[in-house]
Length: 100
Image (cartoon, rainbow, N blue to C red; front, side, top):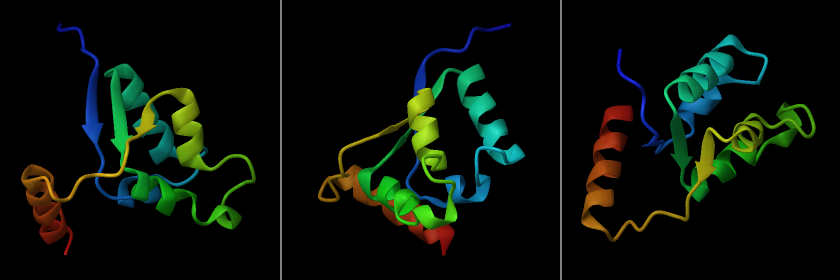
């Protein structure tokens, strides 16, 4: 059995966290368990974080799921992506075409 190593996974879209819902949702708890068990930190760009915190009326005050995940340490927020970087632009274009 191999030991998981610390790693990061970049999340380019808010859809994953929207689909998981609130902290009480089994999808959310499964994602948290997966991340902590495998020592993975999900990294979201600033604009994704803003999308996820932009509708606090739909969440319990003080318990916005993305903020809880950040506090728990399995999600971090990065600086805004540099879309002039060709690698970033290519990944985002491929992601967008997959989502469309």
